[in-house]
Image (cartoon, rainbow, N blue to C red; front, side):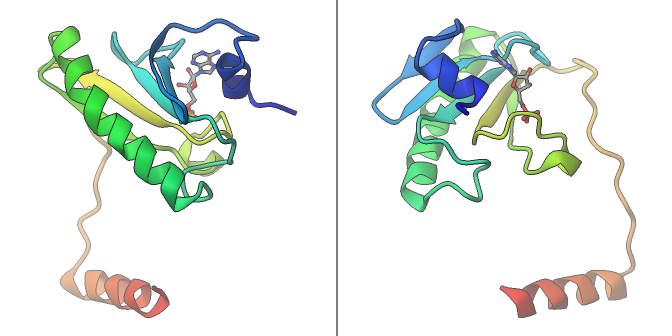
Length: 134
Ligand code: AMP
């Protein structure tokens, strides 16, 4: 069954499209965190960015790099958050690869995650485990 984003790509359902090329589409998030919140989506369906092909991801990031500064300027923002949720645990709700570009302003209230304060030993153990598995 096509994802909701594939239905936007095929124009079965409407969206506020801001950019489109042969492989990629970008449209406004229907429930934006801030005005101008945009989703950048490959036309080729895959559940998330880790499962899209490297070529698709490269082009997706090219588009993000191209349009994010424009979105920041167009919304008179001070910066942006670029993010991708992978898996339900991270809050992913649409299982079709996409990157969020969220314009940010000073004082917009979207303060970051709470952070841990691990010991150097804990950081070393975690780094070692990751290095061994890469
Ligand atoms: P995520 O939770 O990272 O999977 O992000 C999915 C995003 O898609 C959410 O921020 C939704 O608000 C957005 N979304 C879902 N349906 C639509 C739609 N029809 N048009 C635009 N954005 C949508």
